[in-house]
Image: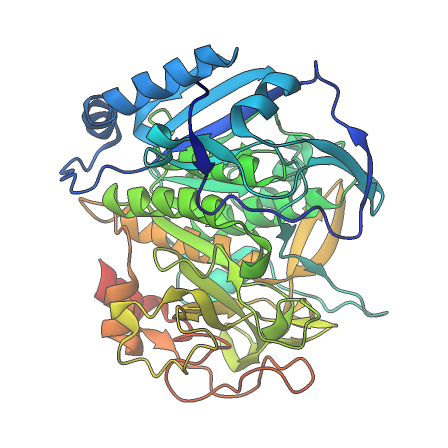
Length: 502
């Protein structure tokens, strides 16, 4: 009698939108699957360092691992990797075996100038495994995210600011972040040593130690023609400019939900580089994600908080709709995760070394994302923030938490492929805040970790932004005194943040 199976919770997908099937995936096509184990109910994990957590979970999940390995073997799949600390088991095998193991059919699709592997419907797993598995990722390879980067589009670009100029204007310059590591997540592109040399010379800084970490077969690829090189350059140069001396580990992964989740879990649990803060400038509207992918990534963000790793993510550049054309407001994930510091965008004007004005970024055909999550309930740290009601009863988390310069009209001078350009987007704000956190961590005995409670507890440590809006047509929000769904609590006030957080 065949094993009883049931749908895997949260795994349902529709076929790729606006793409056409060009046939079934060949039976012998090799596929690598990332299977994430569900946390053990009631587990009390006291481990706050990566090595101890690995040891604890090796014991905690021993039965789960054995059951999944037996399942894989029975379906002709190979266990390619087992990482208990990440709750990850990577399986590999031919498409025919993968389809049979997870009760699905795989097709190749094309459209939008690209091809991908996809499926529709739910995945199925044996009933006795359903409670052990959070997610099965890798069967579908459609792109999951876009970089939150906006090059200046006007005929006469502004002079712009070096990343060190922006750090100085916010009062967070002059730190020595040696001994810290900033992790940066990239889903495409690459960097060159020549660009790094030129960029840090322009900032009068030594080039920091920079290491590329490949995830799921991806690597540093400066020959990428997708435009992602600008994102990589922006992230490295802003983070390095805000935190001189910090090591930068760049995690390159494929632009799929599997690649994105695997990059986050690898960075959070990286014992070799040990980042104390992560910068994420990629994302997409909550409505484009499967529940299983968000559940797996959310586990990683909880791990980050447990390990004292602060996670900063861009809130998006598509205003309050996040680029979705259904006439509704949307927020960007992963910025909307309650364990992530959502980073919105402003426009600054400055004279000499002082900011003379700061408003919500809404120009150049884009603007800061922000709003109210439909997936995550209002977290405790936002109880008194005045977040408006969610449009969905399960939601309520307000986005963003903080902000910083993002408007291309007050953009950053960034060197990409040997050329200097003016770049904006909330992509700049995530590495800016990551650099700020790294600088603060350098003066502490223990890393800050999740900082929401401190920031919401004393919002006077931020520059409140009270002018502007992130409306797309009639959909969106106005800046206001205190927290708002455009710029959160506000932009950095270096001296006050140092007092509050160090």
